[in-house]
Length: 205
View 1 (cartoon, one colour):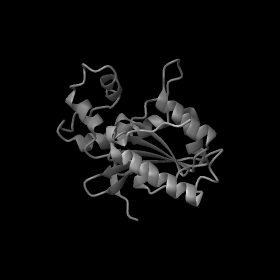
View 2: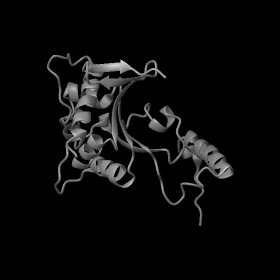
View 3: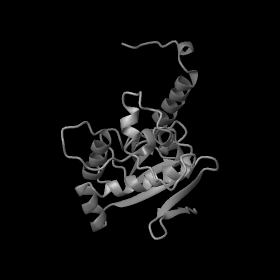
View 4: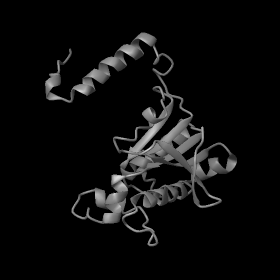
């Protein structure tokens, strides 16, 4: 049984892209080694922002990176309770079951989630306000400087990673490496947090 979609009722690029994807990957059999399982070495916690797609940014094929995306790329602190912890569940699966070797925390410039936090204008929302309120606001940074707040949020998520016992243990044993990164989408430049100077250095490749 199959369904014929009227592409005029949907964004045409979705179907055009799917046709290209199907042609490339079915002809080249690029899923042949990843049909029954995945073995990525890298996990990325990224923002849901439509301009920041890790697979496109890093030019990865299916099966190469394990990606968790949420609003403002927030990693909450470890909480072992009965709550619904989607991001934490993804972290546990990537670290404990896929046994990734690298965890990238990828923030970016002009982040709408961080802007929502500093503007404090989401109190009427069902979920957004509580979610972005996990971002610590630094009083010394003007609310208009959203990008600096974004960088501080990456550092906060980086520190929260170490509250997860199975991340902490693997980092200390050298089994897992954490990479707090910031993408300036205006010029596509990546930066990495340097703990020694408490600031972000440009990544040269």
